[in-house]
Image 1 (cartoon, rainbow, N blue to C red):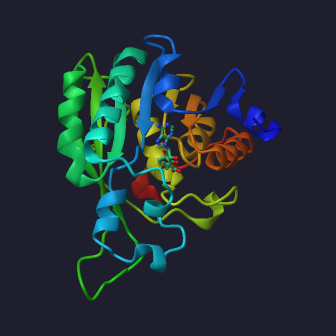
Image 2 (cartoon, protein in one colour):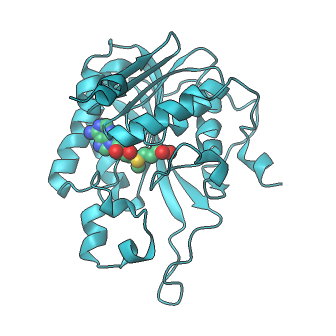
Image 3 (cartoon, helix red, strand yellow):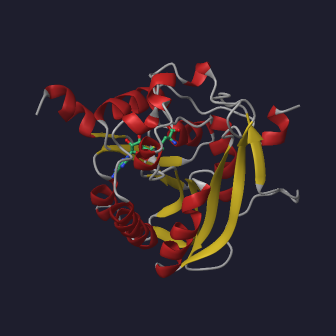
Length: 265
Ligand SMILES: C[S@@+](CC[C@H](N)C(=O)[O-])C[C@H]1O[C@@H](n2cnc3c(N)ncnc32)[C@H](O)[C@@H]1O
């Protein structure tokens, strides 16, 4: 094992804990009922699907996620992986703790079924609309501009919901991730900070513990530091882990806009 890998395995202070490894193994080491909110963006099991369709995306985009190697499982292996994820999530999340999972729409039903088996109460399937996606093959089909997100409660029906008495819709729109959020390295599916701050602000409180077991470029960790939440992040790709660690370490607590509508005015 190289020195760099040893450094990358685990980074901790009293508010941020980052683990470089497989999320199921690392989640098994977390204490029962120790997490207030899980927000995560796991592989969508679309890698093989996209390659089979020969959509030429690798040629069109150098950072194509389907070529990154972390979304290659056969469907049934992916289902079993997500089954183990829900088993651990149920164990470590507090009762009435919330979970947001970003997911492709064709996989939502599979995840709702699996989560329900592990005592998650299904609340909502929402839509995230990207306002400025790449117009790939725009003369051949509809531009891919939406992803789903699923909202669950562990062992209960309602939990923290800081809506400040405003009606919050399940349809949310943001721009693509800005270059200013990619200074620590590029990730093929990096989500914008505003998307995470929207949910973390509504579904958790200051000083509570938020977990992202598929943290990628560390977006959830950045937002947790800005919003004064504690954060646990897990990522098995060493380079993404290093980039995410650097990005999170460089972030300071600060007042940020969390209302998505505000960013569109
Ligand atoms: C869809 S990306 C997350 C992107 C993230 N939302 C962001 O804003 O950067 C999923 C991430 O999960 C990681 N991953 C996949 N399987 C994993 C596993 N079993 N344990 C830990 N990380 C995993 C991949 O390397 C990838 O970085």
